[in-house]
Image (spheres, rainbow over the protein chains, first blue to last red):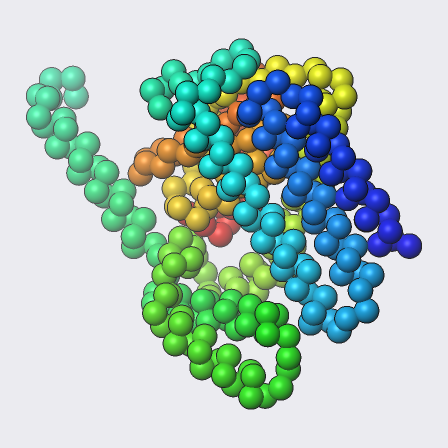
Length: 104
Length: 201
């Protein structure tokens, strides 16, 4: 029962992430939506798959390794995209930009 | 101090920086502890990835990971703070700190996902890039802090600047509450930096 709740939670988080990507105004705020909701949604779907599948224990742990790798790699990818966008001259919308003021 | 000539002042600053660097380098672990920590982590990874518990597999894994850990012992153990006995420290990291971190981050990640859903529906955003300070100075500690800040609600790390005496993080905040550096640091970092200071310098 609880594995289907995890699956449903993952699907809801993925849908909210894609809604955020569609509605937010610029690159940086869209990265917020894609990074967090992809990480949370993929991790909860992987946990649900590890509970559902009828494999031995050591193979179920591999799903958790995948979830760990997603949680490690996704923020780094977001950092690389945001820094590259700022270096190539895309101005963020908003009230203050200390990063441009400090001369980067 | 105001009468010191310019060239002497530069020299004194350089010596201070070198003394700071020397202090940090003294506080790394001895070599055999680094090798053993790397070896244990690689054996656990080998056991999970190969997924069999025959004795030939375990023997091959032990030998190969020992050779690898002799070569690469200071890749991710170089930044661990030297404090206390190594066995007590390893037990404390495995059974206290890592479950604590997973528990904190799971709930922060769920909260940040729901917050993105709320912002996407209501569109009440007020974005901007601000700068906060950090007391961590090691590469690994700063990396984990920046990644955790990206996963906590409403913030995204854009760049880190690491110097010897101070390190700064540039954070894109989707709903700015304050522009003051220390207050923003307290709100954004929360308890994560105190947690990381237990392990990394």
